[in-house]
Length: 100
Image 1 (cartoon, rainbow, N blue to C red):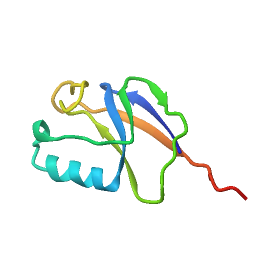
Image 2 (tube, rainbow, N blue to C red):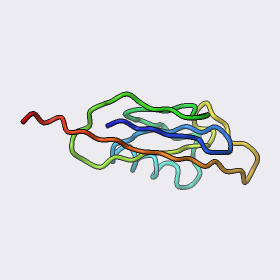
Image 3 (cartoon, helix red, strand yellow):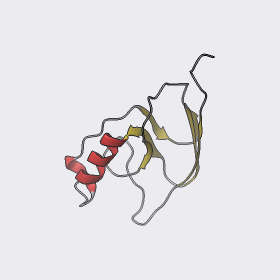
Image 4 (tube, one colour):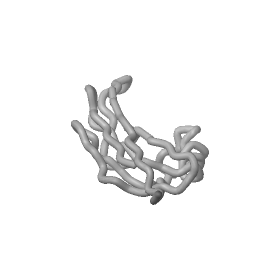
């Protein structure tokens, strides 16, 4: 796959590609705003996302994957004013790696 993300407006954010188990762990840890206790395992990161970024091609095995757009104090990007927001456009390109 190849992921492209573009910040359309607002503060810079971070973006991560996660597998299902890493996503569920993130949700379980952060659902009560416990971001300072959160760790994050991910497959690819786009950080900081300040304009437009495209990853190179990378392989994924069969399964469920998530793109997490994050603007908390978890990583190096800090949120802007309270109630601020960011708008993002993204695409995921795929190609088969099976040989005929």
